[in-house]
Length: 257
Ligand SMILES: [Zn+2]
Image (cartoon, rainbow, N blue to C red; front, side, top):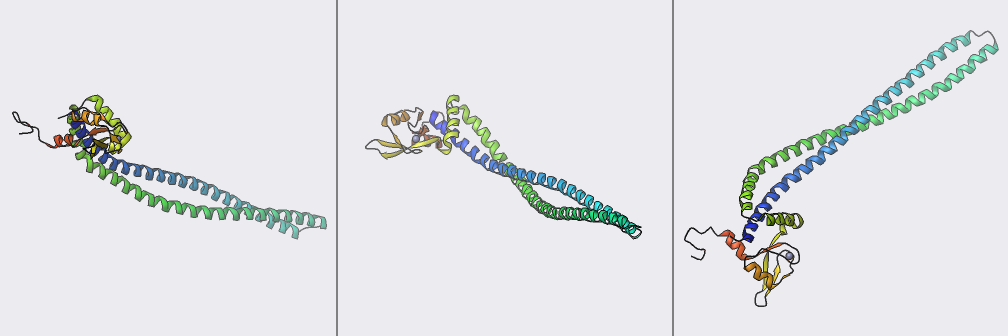
């Protein structure tokens, strides 16, 4: 089997491995993204819960302040009833009016705090609902990922050991080049030469469609490993594909026999 045919076998095995892994990679990426969104929601929930606690405490403070002023006002009213002079009475009245203003301010603050508490509680409920929803999605994404992993495991092991065997037949430098090409060109790292017009010696690269000169074709025909002059992919011909499909000849047999 020629180097090109062996390299083609390696390419086909690698394609299958990459195809299998890409399904798992997609499932893993989805799980990671969902987990990240879940963590964002959890941290928003914690922040809002802490804010709510603070607001409730502030509201309770304002409420206490109102009650304290109220008690003081009631006491003042008692004192006013017992006032002995006009001067004394008007001093009590001034204090009472000042307390009234204070009380109104405290009541306003208390009301504002209550409104904020209500708003925040609504937000928290919304976050909790999103979090529950997200947790379901994450659990599903996790089981999908695990299922995919289990699904491809056996086939992946099989292909990996197949790859090891095939790789032994291939020059290490060529295997590295193929890997680079696969990273760069993906499915088009190896391509067959297409016959456009045999009589006029016209062939093209099946990957980039650019012309393959007759000298290049004759090199391929002599079993030399060749890159496409335009896109750089490894080129092969029908002959390489055919030789891959044929069983190895037994001792004493030839392919033509
Ligand atoms: Zn090309």
